[in-house]
Image 1 (cartoon, helix red, strand yellow):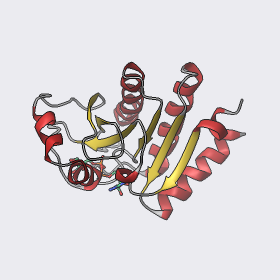
Image 2 (cartoon, helix red, strand yellow; image 1 turned 120 degrees about the vertical axis):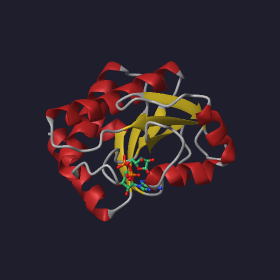
Image 3 (cartoon, helix red, strand yellow; image 1 turned 60 degrees about the horizontal axis):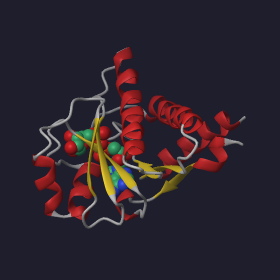
Image 4 (cartoon, rainbow, N blue to C red; image 1 turned 180 degrees about the vertical axis):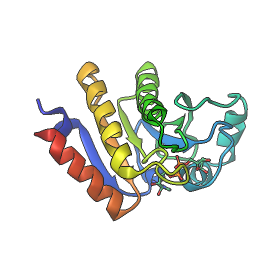
Length: 174
Ligand code: AR6
């Protein structure tokens, strides 16, 4: 089976509109909200999300935490904290950890369908050309090891990012 073709998709969309088991938030380590996709998720989920986030005590970079989805169509939100891009090799390790830890947490909660935004590729400055292969490689490896998992969607916000993910997927499918 070609895992990439069957279980990984890319979509240009607002991630808050997706009806899946979980969507992933590109949060900051306070988990108390912010701009970008974090702000959009908090607005769409409603104030109860912030209330639950306050009980979590933050989240270190590279790790992930789970909450309810509240007013979202998604049942859960997995909050992960990407690295602020610095150009050091540590960035890639931390970004990969975001994807791996989010997916591992998902499995623990019986989540089988999930969408990721381009973690760290907005305010945190991670170049999409470096981040997209890390995201896709992590998802592919995870899906190979977790055969009951059904779908990983990359929800991108611009044509540029969508095209970039598509070209990386095309190269990796071969
Ligand atoms: N759906 C999908 N993608 C989106 C959406 C959306 N509704 N809104 C923005 N994006 P960013 P980061 C894209 O900056 O770089 C926050 O303030 C966006 O175009 O949201 O990890 C947090 O609190 C970009 O491609 O996250 C942190 O402080 C991608 O999502 C900090 O920003 C990620 O951009 C995290 O920065």
